[in-house]
Image (cartoon, rainbow, N blue to C red):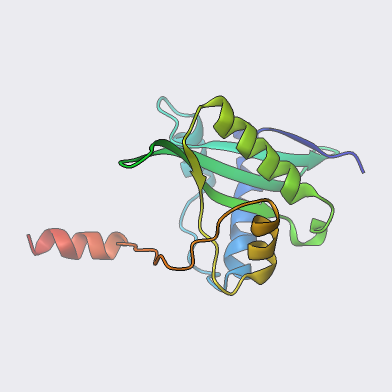
Length: 159
């Protein structure tokens, strides 16, 4: 099977969303995805794109994605954040994740970022092992903090 990794195109967003939903099921949050194809098209390909996406494909079928965006570290400077790296469950173990991560790291290097960062669930041992084998430092002493949409509204109402 011949696999290529390329920049995602607007017409790939349906396949991208399918993989995002597949990830949500894997991460035991099947009803958590609110983003739509229209959202992905607007925010990735509108006037001010807020993310960049890579796809791995074979025979015009998207097998995996890596979605990234820029952040800024007050300690380090420009940082590339890898929001999600997803490989279709039926295609895992073929090197697609490595190909996507390679592309993300090359992209970050081209942007001269000081760090590439992402989160991984503490129970996702296959992913943790994969990242550690690639030289990533999994920070187990940090907690991720989220303020969701309801939390934001609640916060604002109490200011």
